Length: 221
Ligand SMILES: Nc1ncnc2c1ncn2[C@@H]1O[C@H](COP(=O)(O)OP(=O)(O)OP(=O)(O)O)[C@@H](O)[C@H]1O
Image (cartoon, rainbow, N blue to C red; front, side, top):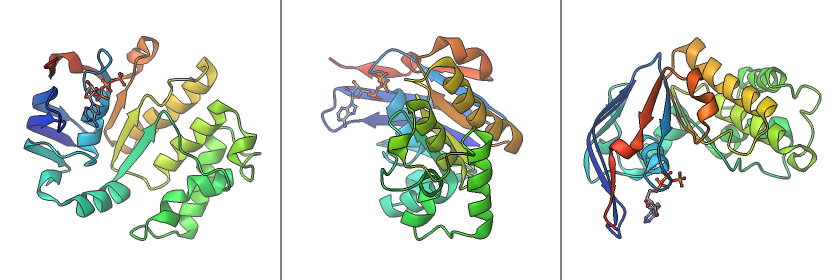
């Protein structure tokens, strides 16, 4: 469960303010975050991920208050417990599809690469239709296939929370549905909360709840 209470966040220039009195995402929920450009959707995801720190308030994940942690502890928590997917998928061009999926284990000493993780990486690649492309380099993949790899990478650590920032933004409908269903199904089957920022109103019916960030943010300019 994700619980944000009495959040106040400002960037250092003070022009933008995000205030969230109470936002709880339960384990069985898939929440879409919508709202106009520049109203704080990405900022909200970064707060929940512990990348940003609020000036006031608490952000709890499974009853652990991230705002009590220092930056490094928040980072370790994020690596182990949170799955992140962004619009720019940040694949490493010199690693194969399989190794890109396993990247969290290679770059983070807090995670242990096991045979189980290798097996899961292969199964995830199979599940998104990449079974014949596991040894390819990202440069040999389409945009949609690259984003499928990024979705698998977010799931290979079996995170307790999934945070996604427009993961289907540039994709055609077929790839969009593969990526979306992969992420939603993980959340539904494992009862792990999912929060996804999206501009795509066509996909909103797939979520259990919609949060409009316009209700919370205030631009002072
Ligand atoms: N590092 C930063 N320093 C100062 N202001 C920032 C910074 N990052 C974002 N902002 C400002 O904070 C506000 C919220 O930005 P954010 O990226 O969260 O919006 P968004 O709703 O995700 O926008 P979009 O839909 O365009 O992606 C914007 O006004 C933006 O200009």
